[in-house]
Length: 471
Image (cartoon, rainbow, N blue to C red; front, side, top):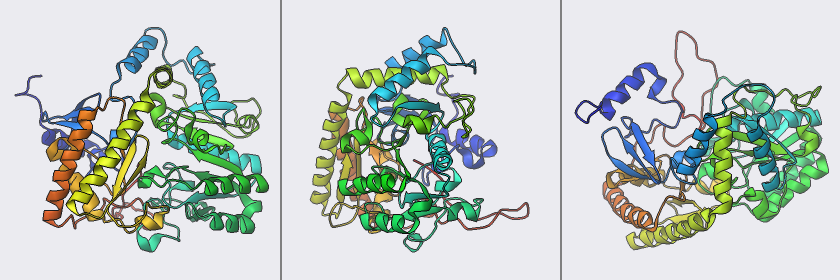
């Protein structure tokens, strides 16, 4: 199709909205100010839209393409396996065996592992088997952590100030008794953890945590906090689950558990495991994993038609091979350091109160004064108007960071020093323009993953909009 006959982004987006609710297939893909964005090509550190505009991509689909978009080695592995094998849905393939062995060799907590298609499925099964193993009801999660779309953990992610400290579901349609079985605590608060176990320890089936809460940018964990989780779970006989869907492989081949030296009972993985191909994994102690119905006679049901699909398994094996054999982490860590230092200088030059933080290849700039934030409460000081405002202007300079409040940005193996130079130049210009415009005051639907009204939609009416999931 030549450029004259190719449909524009606007016309394609209009067609999408006629047949796809909201025109997108995930709740945080419809971005105010960018509702006509249609992506037609991606390669390396860039993507292109239907109107031919080029963007250097730092959003990176919430983080999966650690190697960069359309990595040729990963794509070649997928193409090769497609010449000999597709989905048969019985027994096991050679690739699944190799991938399971690889994951067990890399992740300290994993004795045995099961594959899923998404990270949400992995966290769902982690909670299910924890309850099966313990016979207990309660689950502990932390304000600001996102563990997928399922009911037990669909609350208290990006909450408004008046919803912190109370149940704050991100969706309607969840049974109140399910929400009542989840205790929400403050991240990095050792005293709150010890108090919860003192009161409820005999009924706590599991504690699930992002070891680094990246769904609100980057809250780095205190070592004392992670150690307290391990101590209290061990003492009470509860299951400690590290949700490493984001941190796994992006920060280290052994995940955050290898960085911290704290070993959970179960680990969930996804995103960077296969450079963007749809795969997740749940692994951990053999006695827990053997409770799944993949082990004959075991009580916790586990199934999925597409689990271990040969194409995504090949993608994962090729990705992990490249992460082991090439200086991927060295490269992205070096560029990450450059970005964080450069952004700090840009904001200082412009006289803007900002805290630049992150880890390795992840970076985020919070518009507030004071020390690096440790808890979600600290993030309530972030100026969402500035945060979203400058990111809405970055595409004018050929740079894309997701313009939603508190969302992190990512560097890939495909990014270069020249890309970092352009990012810093574009940020300087976009922040200056946002300051001149007074920030952004219209933030409806862009800053929350919470605040959903209780109740049920009926055929005769509709509920108000509430921002959905994300990662």
